[in-house]
Image 1 (tube, one colour):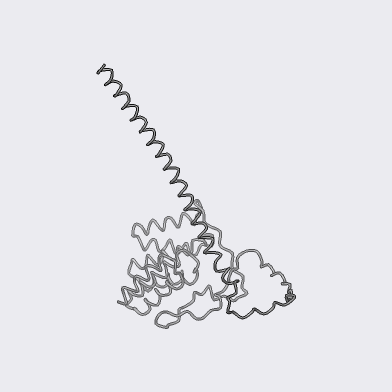
Image 2: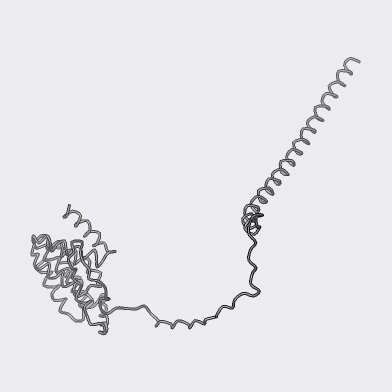
Length: 265
């Protein structure tokens, strides 16, 4: 009987423990529901406060104070406003506007107040039509082969022979699209030979006659370096400042700025 009684006590204790577990689970569920409801109430309260803060100024503005003077009576009818019809703006001709001459503007000056020379090709008459671009030289053309031979001679440091080839190229009307490149490399040949006067002549011809060429900023920059080699420091600085002003977004402009900083400090 004692054994049976002990067994019954154990079963009773186990059942009570399980009942407690169930009640704890129910309480946790109830607490979770209460927390959810509380969060929902907090959200509604925040939304209500936000609405109140937005609408409160408007209400305060419209609500008259007890001591305020009575507002004047509004007119019976709003004044009639005159309606003005605008004419449509005429459409501009299709295509971007192009300039055949340097646009009218104040004279460009360097930091020391000196006037910057404007490339000759920009000094054409305002009504002059822009010449058509020369036909590009293609691989297989005689001019293309001559240009490649001249570059090879320059790369081999055979400057005198390269000069002859580049000069022939500048006189070839069928290779007109390579004339700007030829003048640039002529300048480079003379520069490497130490003939800086001739280098300036070729680089300046490139900058003056072909200002829209990809080589123009490089040629003007090398002209500045050539002037420096000739001991004409003032002219060298002015030329490098032209590069910065005329071709501000080019790599040569960044190199010119670095040289100006080096030479003036």
